Length: 532
Image (cartoon, rainbow, N blue to C red):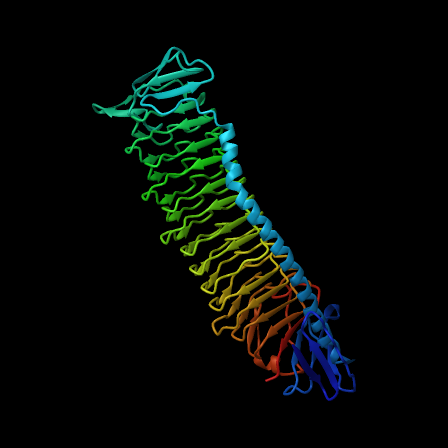
C-alpha cells in the first residue's frame, strides 16, 4: 500500500507501508513555521490546509516561532515510527505463538501428573463400611466420647484406630444444646482427638456432617466420606485449615459444597468433585488458599463459580470448566492469585465474569473470551504479567477500571465498536504495549484518567472522531508516544482545559497544556488531523 502526501508546492513523501519505508524527499522553499516551548518541544503546521494533511503539536508552555523547519522531516519521523512499531508487533506475535503452544502442551499433561501425584501419596487404610473409624499416630486412651457416642480402640486394626456406629457428626459450634430452659453441654472429645486425627473413614450410616466438624484437623491426611444417597452436603468450613489433607473424593450423592469447605487445605493436591445433575455451584472461597492443588475438573452440571472459589490456589496449572449452556457465571476473584495458571478457555455460555476474576494470574499466557460476555469488570486481568494477547469480543461494551493494569507482556489491543469509555487506569503500566486500536464508532467519547499511564513502549494511537474528553494524565509517562491521530477537527477536552475547534483549524494557534494534565512525559507529542 502506497500513499503520496504533498507538503507545499514541491515537498513529496512517498510512504510504502509494508514493513519497509521508502522516502523520496524534494525540499524547496515551502517550509513549515516552527514553534518552540520548554525543552524545545516543537510543533509544525502546514500552510496549504485544504490539499494537505494538517499537523498540530502541543506544547507544555507558550510557544514562540523558530523559522525554516523543513516540511518532510515530520513525515519521515512518523513513517519511521510506524515501521518500527510494525516490526516489533511481528516479533511479539511470533513470541505469542510459541508461548501459546507451550501452554497447551503443559495444560494437556497437567491432569495426568496431578492425579498421579495424589495417587502415589495415597495410603487410604480403611475401605468402605458402616462403622466410622478414626485413626491416630498416638494413643487416645482406651476410648473417648464424642457427641454422646463412645469410640472404642479397635486393636484388630492398624495404628490407633477407634470405631463407633453413628448416623451424624454435629457442628463444631453445637457443643451446647437447649434442654429444659437452659443450655446443657454435650460430651465433647478431648482436644487431641481433633488435632491429632490422621486418617478417617466416615461410615456409610452417616447422613450429615455439621459445619466445621473437622476444621483445624492439622494432622488429617486422608478421609473417606459416606457412600449413601442421604449424604448430600459438605457443610461450611468442614475441612477448613486441614493443612495436611492430600486428596479427597466427594461422593456422587453430594449436591452442595458450602462456602470455605476446603479453604486453606494447604497440601491438597487432588480432588474429585461429584458427578450428578444437582451439583450446580462452587461456592465462595470453597478452595481458597489450597496452595498445592494442581488441577481440577469442574463437572458439567455446574452453572456458577462464586467469588474467591479458587483464589490463591498458587499451584493450579489448569482447570477444566463446565461445558453446558447453563454455566453462565465466574464470580469476583474466582481465580485471583492463581500464579501458576497458564491457559484457560472460557465456554461460550459464560456471560458474567466478576471483578478481579483472573487478577494476579502472573503465568497466564493466553485466554479465550466468549462472544457472550458484554463487560470486562474492574481489575479482571490486573497484574497478569505474562499475558501476551487477548481478543476482546465484539459483544463487549464496557471495560472496567484497571482491567488490564500491569499486563506488561501485552503488546497489542483492539477496543471493540460498542465500547464508549476507556476507564481509569484500564491499561496503566502495560509497559510492552506497542499499539492500540480504538474502533471508530459514534459513541466513543472518553479516555479516562491515567488510562495509558506508564505505557512506555506505546508509539501511536488512533482515536475515533467522536472523542470529546481525554482526561488528566491519560498518557502520562508514555515516553515513546509521538503521534496521536484524531480524524476530525473539533472541540476536545484535554485534561482540565477545552481545546476549541479553532485551534485545530488554525496554523497560528497551539493549545497550552499544564503538567500533569494529559501528558507529563519529557518527549514531544503531536496530534495529527487530516485536511477537511
